[in-house]
Length: 325
Image 1 (tube, rainbow, N blue to C red):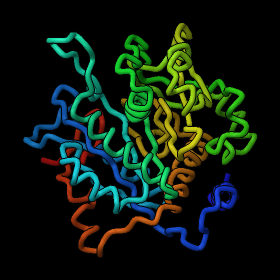
Image 2 (image 1 turned 60 degrees about the vertical axis):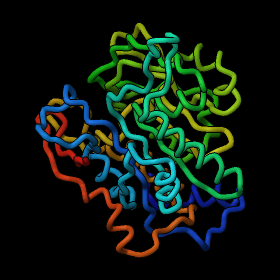
Image 3 (image 1 turned 135 degrees about the vertical axis):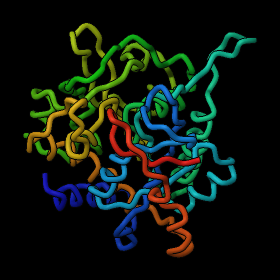
Image 4 (image 1 turned 30 degrees about the vertical axis):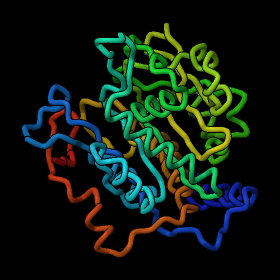
């Protein structure tokens, strides 16, 4: 589907929701929440403590937006400040611990990273409730933290999927047909997603369909748009969702890999078909962000918060990185 057609569909939904089309932002600014740099996950040698993989910046640019750095270790006040300047939030993939066991109570609690993601999620909910429009996208780990926070169940994520380094098909649910997200895909692209393995998976944790529907918050606030299966077909898991009331979307797979990650260790598909299909995801999300009216004070303010202020690093397996103190 062309970018023009994607934009037309987004405009249609915007008119239904009463959005002011004359105020659409030409170049949205998408905030990317950094993640802790866990040494065993990277071969790079550095004294920096945060990382954003460079492929995500190119992915955002490919959709027509600019990437903005958000320090996951920021104070809540600083997160509120940067939130008022960005037009959307991208929660990226990774291997960050989202919960930790309290040694005294034995219960799972949110890690600092998850708590900061929750601050941003709460701000987005508040803005949308007050008549604004603020979209969130979660990819892989971002999918997991978004559903974890919305569910308010710190044991929601289950390990043992062992869904690493393979491409899967999507098994669409009845909600796909009328979803905001998949309404942007042509019928041919929906058929391709359902029949050709092209969604790259690399995760151990996942959300099981029964666990999703057991959770009242998820039942009331989210819809499952698709499921997928592990490489050997033994395990099914939720693979794409959207919120019912809010412009929140998430996928367990990595749509950025097909067109923006050519690492030989990552067996994502790079066919013309797969690249075009995966491009629709970011085109849709960036177009959602165009309806947000946040802005930076001036160009200098934006430059000071650019993702490109990070130190460039390189990991032999993952590729280029933006590193932060």
